[in-house]
Length: 144
Image 1 (cartoon, rainbow, N blue to C red):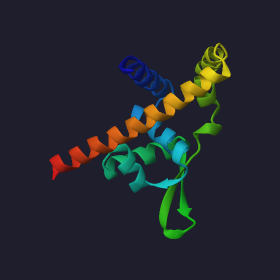
Image 2: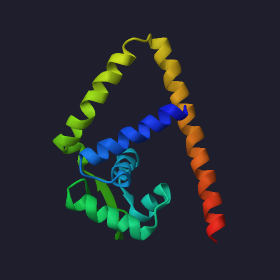
Image 3: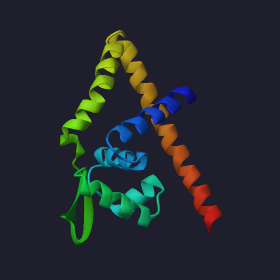
């Protein structure tokens, strides 16, 4: 699992660099794609980045059109971040070879195999989420 994790991180770093972004910038956009529009404070909590760093990150991403700020429909005083990069051709072109290769890999398995793999990935993701929360608790205790 560590090997796969390492290669995933390295792949993401290379994708970010190929798009002229920092890795934290690209990961933040991916988080927004998963969560949907959220506030800068929520993004700060998820990423563990300081709010000032998140503000600078958002400024960079907005400048290149990867996110946009919008008024929160539930509270006009708040601003939410909306991901926009999925519409950018260079992003689709960058991920397309991986998507095609993974599709080829998946087609070599039975539906039952894929169900089991999907269950495993879902459970492994939940374990990682819990570990991230525990690390963030330790980090916040040590900085207080």
